[in-house]
Image (cartoon, rainbow, N blue to C red; front, side, top):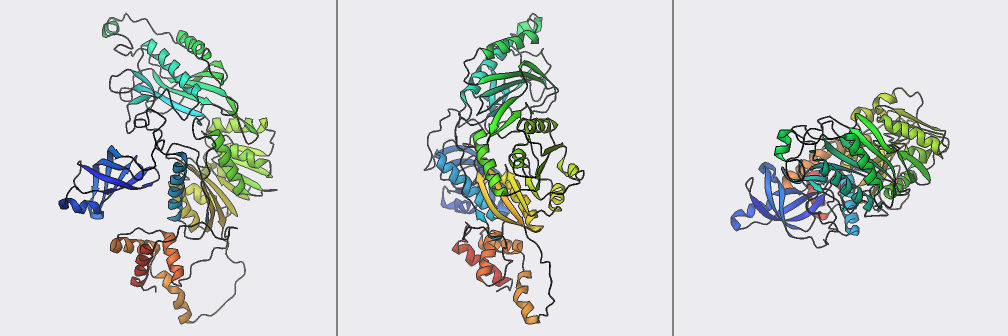
Length: 581
């Protein structure tokens, strides 16, 4: 196998986040060794026959990475995607799969991730579906740009695999139709000005982003146009000024006031199903390609809207975090509340609390809830939301979780964690663990971050009781995961006993090889990858005593993947090699 060459292969498995493992189909007997190389390719589906191009080679480990060139044969379960841009837009990776197949894939991916790090029995619950698989998003951030270099002005989402190219997504299938009407009107008005979009390299241009938020329950809509201050860079070509006009200076000077009045008039005239409650303009001159605001001006209405979840009402501001799938959020937070259980008379910490959604859902049954969130705007919204819902036992603090925990004198009885995608900072996690609460509920929007944090939590004495995936993001590769952890306590009473050396030898086998050493041996000798769970299962079969789970699920048998026969034989071989059996 050579770098930069095209090969044919079949996708045998897809891991989160949409990373496919491809078995190479050698073109001749001379290339038969290529079939032994494990190639990873993103953006594929299990069962597809594909052409890919190698981008990285790790021949010592018989691994390679590649990029998708062409899908030669679709997967057996594939259907025609409802969106015309599904092949080129980077938004929806699973739109060509029936929704039931998407759910099964995500459940399998999360189960595999959890089994890789959880060594004791736990309950893995079936994935919970979104009530509305299509047209579900309550927020979209669209970017201005070109579909190709020096092309006409576009407004929409990034082309798959491209940092620069933008596709005009005016018929998106995961948002309400109101979004598409607003996007088309804003794009048409922007083209009429002749002004250029903000270029990522030159940092010149006017139009940057269009942010639309629409509440599913109330139908209220907030529109925010984000621009720079550069009103002098024009587009040369059919959609803007000519070169001659630009060079001669004969272009009519752009007037923001007139432009914003037109924007409001034309948006208010649209036949929307929802209610336009606010039109905003945010100024952002930062070179970073992110939606941000140096100054936000209300052009029409107000700078917030309301959404409802599980009987509570939430005020949402332009930049505050709120779950992007309102109906799915009810399933997610309902699952979290189920895991939290009885909190009567207890003090609960809600860390990374956002606009205080989960905190307020718990506050009705807890003695008190303290939420900590780094985004000040979200904290102010949380306070207003609590007042709106008549909750007086909620306290919200603005600041970094690690720093703010040192300022809180009270000690929690329970902690809820809902961190951003990257998970919890190691120092913050250590501080959280130091409270020693009986139960933790971890809500994760990126299961690989949860997987990493679970390793530390288990090392520090927490046991995973149960895990449940929740599909907040249908048609995409993303998924939420809710996890309940319980503290394993050391015995409070001690009895001195005397053990003979022969008795010590029975259990000392556990110290002869670590799980990592066993994994390395099995991979090197047998070419198989095994998880901690599989090793623990085989050790128990061999009579090697593992720590018993004192917090078993109420289910008689926790749902677990059992070690395949070939991997069991390989693990037994490793145990014999290390003298453990």
